[in-house]
Length: 148
Image (cartoon, rainbow, N blue to C red):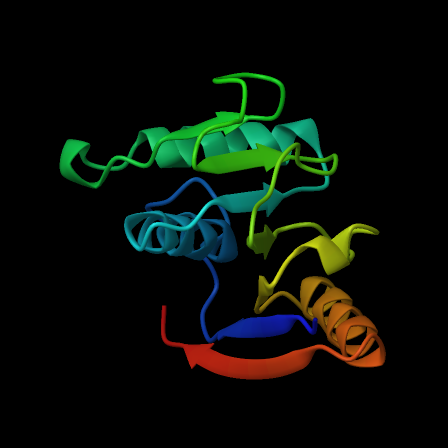
C-alpha cells in the first residue's frame, strides 16, 4: 500500500490576529474538514507545547464547527476522531497531519499524509527534507499552493 502525501504550500506567513503559525491554523481547518468527512485523524507534533497550541486552537472553533479531539493519553479509550500527539497513535487512523519537523517512523501506518510548507526559510527547508523522504519511500506526492 502506498501513501498519498499532500503538501500544502503557504504563500503568506501568519496573520497578526492569530497567535499560532499559519500552517497550524491550516492544519486545524484541515482536521475539521476531514472529521466532517467521517475520517479519523492523527496530528503529529514535535513538542508538548505544539500539541497544546493546536489543541487550544481547535477549542476556539465556533460551536457549529466543533471538532471532537483530544491530546494523546486523554479522552475516550479509542481516542476522539482527532487525536494530537508525539507518539504512534493507538488504534487505526487513515490520515496523518504532520506538524513535526520530521517524518515519523510510523508513517507507513497511514494512507494519507498532509504536510505543510511554511513561508519561513528554515521551516521551508525542513519541508523539502520531508518531501524527499516521502519520495524515497515511494509515496504519491501532490502539492497545492494555499493563498492563506
